[in-house]
Image (tube, rainbow, N blue to C red; front, side):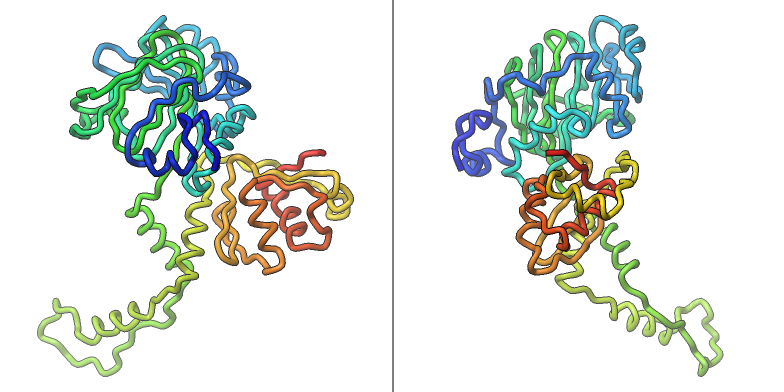
Length: 375
């Protein structure tokens, strides 16, 4: 892969080998301020969408107050001149320029992608010294911010706080960033960013499954996937003088039944794909598509289809996964489905009207997984 300016002149593989999950990287002038730049009024308007979640952080001395939005322009206008931050999660779901930013990072699997959070901070605005358990690219929008970073000190948090603020923070390095600069931070690097003037920061985050959560979800999957029929019976039971003791035959019966629960490689694959593509809690499905099948097919060649930004579409082997559901892809369709999953966009002229893909897209339109774009 070619070298990328927004990766500090490194190719994606060079960046992954040298920095990903290893060391921070400051990239001055990584991106030119273009259509991803927002102003405060635009951010407030976008934050009203149900696909976004909003928090307001106000610092008063050593205390941080947290309120949850969305907030109106008049409410924001009443805030003090300094020491507050507006955080809006999921901006890539509602803003085309922000969505395009994610395409720059498609060298990282979509299974790891979270979303873009945009923060606006008044002078002095910050969310306290903290760390994240995921990789993040901090892209500076308009204005400037001072970052302090540390990688070798305690990650203990102040108890009983709504924000995850570190008990102690000793910076090992610092920088000032302006529009277009990127600071990449691996997981568990503590950092503290303070606005030097009114400014925007775009946090491009990459999630990683927490294994204890995986365990819980997999047990739910097994419960839905497998059934143990029957009921324990003991017609030859004899009287006992130790009624508090678990009977040996009951314990043995449970042991035998539980040992029947077995899973295959395909079970693990299907679970993983369904788990990774589950919709976020605040995802709002689109109104159902009302096109008839006949009209859909008549418009097919002049329409493109794009996976909705709130939806993950992944594949592996003969399976596709979307919206927390697994489906089997016929061998003849696997190549075009993989192309669709990798680019998240497909042109209708590449789709055969009588194909499995055409049938699938028609269903996905009604489920809100894809949107149609006239070409």
